[in-house]
Image 1 (cartoon, rainbow, N blue to C red):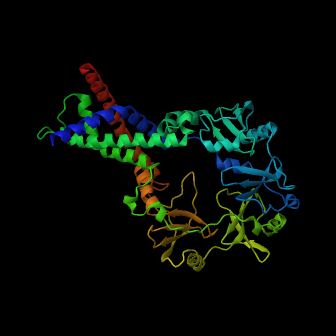
Image 2 (cartoon, rainbow, N blue to C red):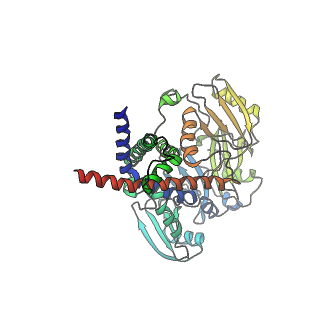
Image 3 (cartoon, rainbow, N blue to C red):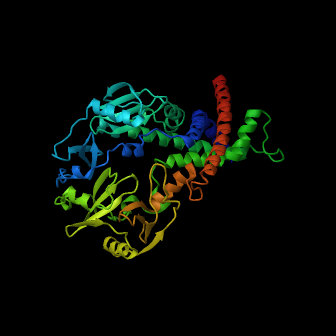
Length: 485
């Protein structure tokens, strides 16, 4: 028993000394992240930058080609209608919608007009970049190079990144957001460019640091009880740093453990023994289907325009294939929610909401006899929940399939598409990460989100005290070991 105690104490000293400073950085940066994350281009602003279509333009727009694979958007860019064809690898092919000729590059003059209209400020300077920087540290940005980095002469010191390949604003930062990221997202997520670009290295580094942190926190909780002596109050220590590390470890140790554990599972796979369903046992359910442009090849865009009930401020049309029917998602003033049109028997009309009977018929077609339960959901729950980054509509149909993985599908009655899918595995992962790490629970809605943030801040402050005292004790321990050697 004495040997086991010594092992736990030594493990806590070693792992705590390795990660105590990183723990402190994680908690401080975590508080910053509660209010401001890593900067991204504003999707809503980019959408409203699109010029609305006119009826005249649709008389000259040609139908998309059957050979195109992947999602197809029609929108205005640089004063002319274009098609964007999104391929599986995240790249775009841009075509002039009147001639169907490829558009390979967008000029600097176009970028100047775009950013000036977006920020309403003069341009200070423009740089052409062909490599990643601190604000575009992900490998998927490679498809957008070359990029024009536009420094705006405004009070916020805004920088806009415009892709010459796609003509889009792919990133937007300002001075306040850059400093928030330097203090929050970058150290918290280890988003240093040289590391983040090597995705395998970045994932391994985060997983291993989190794993060491789990050992440090578990052993810390155990050592806290080992060091406790009967009749000595809450702590036997007299020296302030020892005393407060022991006390705050009692109070916040479990939170430190769950925080590190949830960070670990944000990237690590859930082991099969925790869910009893391995990934290769997950049943294949094909509800959504890829866009098949052969369904749309005979549809003249002018015919789509004629079918629209409202023609004001139409900024984007997306071609879709849903349940073997050609569909068109039409976006007007609301960039999140489209009006959905469907073609049947050479007629285009607004798609009616899916009835429960229709969804049941589709489920019988796709599930091959698997039993299921279908209900209408009018409120967000712990799994289906709208966020600032991803809007999810209500109501939805919730399809609970009685298979080994206990798969749940959330079906949009307006489009007929599957919006979310959960199995035992990712439901557990959602709790281990979103639940434990961010307290994203159904009890905290938009009206009580301040309470969620307050709880996170208070617990993080406790973690900071644990970390600061841990750093101090680590320095003392390392000096003591150094003198012995």
